[in-house]
Length: 416
Image (cartoon, rainbow, N blue to C red; front, top):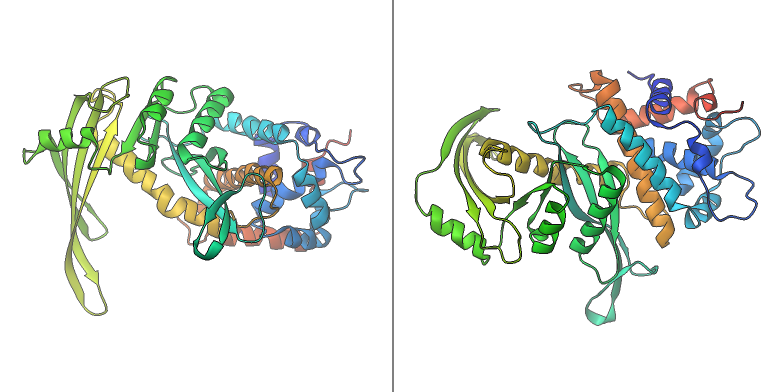
């Protein structure tokens, strides 16, 4: 397992990266000594290996990254990387991202939820500062005249079994909300991939008629978590369900816990102002019982949770069990996906605080994460079920590049 570097490089270069992709790299530097292709390759591999800063990438470049470059080329310094990122051609980076993800789609390398291709859209904070800002910062005023400068973005990520790859990202601009950025992202995803998913699942923050109508206008269904008890739709569903008997109920057992699931499921609701089609509302009540250790002997515990969901999927298109699975799968992303990406892949680290550089880093980082996940879960399936973490694998790849006597540039560079 600890000699995967050659296989990783060979896998991503032969299966996903299009021929001549390094020639797509461009920036606005005048007569650069180090080519934009070298910058792209250094960043892509550095992000794959979970390198945490441009300074670390500079040190590792001098130490081992030259093994990725043909003779006559040298690794870029941290200043060169930052200077190039500020002048990067975002169109070329997105073109590479789309080309790779089109191959992922054609090869059907991403899991489904039942018979549906499901993605989640959600926003997350990237980083904040009180001393540095750029034209795309969101300014938040605090007491005492203190101003905080923030960056946020909206992501689209696969829901379902691993690998839960990313499909796109859109920064939230100053004075905007997540929904505005999400609408731009939906438009870009449709332009890049056409029917990019069967279902988009979102949290209550996206429960807006404009967003629902835009997604449905593309022929894509929605699953939306409802939390606002003031909504007419929620009140109508509460009144209809009342204390009546559930439409279905069943019991699940897992890991010493038993979960009683009750579902109320009705369609034809028309009380959401501005939404252009009737909706279906699914109410799910879960009662989980078992024994939990709390500072001593195990104690019997009972936990109850209610989930209220609106969806454009009809009962014929998707059973209530599938709707519940979609919601639970989306929580996997919220609870572990972003947490892992921020913790292990340094998504919260601002490599360069400038609007073009920030977006270039986001796209290259998500591409590197996708390639790393595809390698682990589609090529090295022995990783699944092992006790090793993704962080350990990235560390092995970094160390192997340091100590390996081999050179790897021939997998990337066409010198014919």
